[in-house]
Length: 151
Image (cartoon, one colour):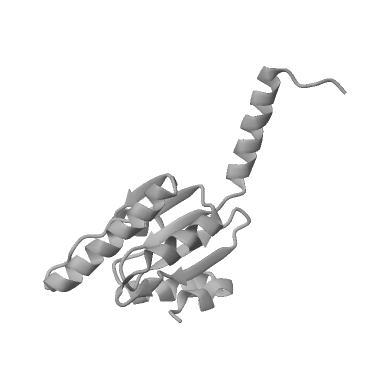
């Protein structure tokens, strides 16, 4: 068998890198202390879990370990903003959680896109009512309806 020339090994490495990336999941992140993370696998499987917390804050260590274990190729983080009549403490906690999530994806060198709630909800044909959106998804995707309930 003939040895590969340097340019051929580079091509092989790029193809392997591409195929490896195609087999890695995409994360969808709903920030906040009561937020969640969904992992969409290339085969269509969806894993969903709560953001790990400790003493009312994001458990960054557990978050980083969990995200690293999935080795995602991309993360989409909802870029929500403070709402009228929210308290200063809750807005601060949300901001800390959002920052921790962005920092985790940055440290793990995961390409990250911030998406406004309006943009992704419009794309999926959802409105601002969270409960109505959950019910709509449960009807359309009965095979995933148990995943749409908070544990």
